[in-house]
Image 1 (cartoon, helix red, strand yellow):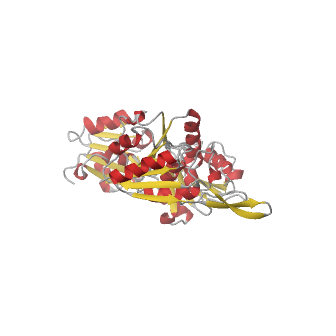
Image 2: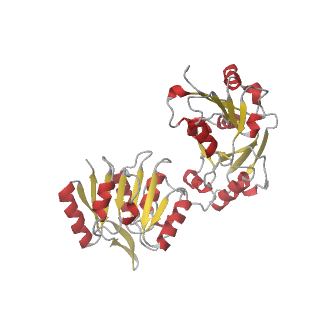
Image 3: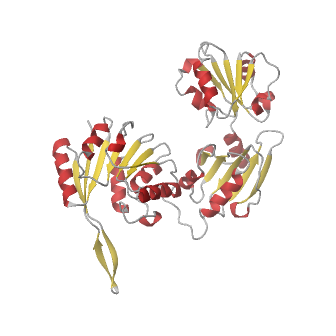
Length: 404
């Protein structure tokens, strides 16, 4: 690591005394030392110029990566493990491994699991720092262990109320303040009896999810019950949705375009398949666009993006997606061709046709581009007088194809 110009040093609440000799040497040899005011206060007199993070932090990050890169010896102080939701991820994303050295400290996540006797591999870590609280919906399952990095001292009260509103008010609730330092404090209770409005600014929340008696947990597989969605009726039904997601075949880190999104069901369940999956939903109607965003928040994927307007005019300037679902406007002139041209090589298209006109369109495309055509028939048993009878949903012609 002789070539590295950047050192990223994790520091805990035990401060300077808790650093290893290598970490201390990295700080003491730096020309510029960046960090939060709290972290810089731990450091004794050093030769480096002390640079407290501004708010927002972006200008300082840009200064490190442009002005100082390869010219100065820079050290950065960060809480615990800098590569766990930390500044280390931001700083090193576009650097060669030979340019930097990361010296981690024990993370607050590890310390919390150690205090509680929880297996790290069985515990989900969520950061609320600059991230919406609604992301938690995706992880609320009976018995699930969660550790949350708080935004500030008001986070525990906000999370407790969120759990109550989500039907998990009975969950076990623990807050650790200043974990690993001399001021460490632990508070235990349940979400529905939590009364502390303001905790220490540096805190972490640990939860064991307990569903209230009337709560319906959200399944983790595609094909959520239709009544989980607020809709005007324009939605891909659960049986067809499950088949559609299987054909779209989401992989971690991939992006979907949901064209003619309606209620947003396919895009939402695409994103629920993995935390790193993303989706852009295209919807012309203002009321449906708002409904998509509301459903996305309720179902744990609040970062789903909605673009209002007609396709293909709204596609300009966007990066190629990995998959496209066409659920509305299939027969519109130019829509498919524009989507196909934008699709990345190896990307997938799935189109669901309901009308005769849209069936003609997908049959034409299948002749030109190949792929598979499948007819989907679904019937649901419903009361007919005093007995049950089959009520058929409209048949779906589904075309799926991979761009070679």
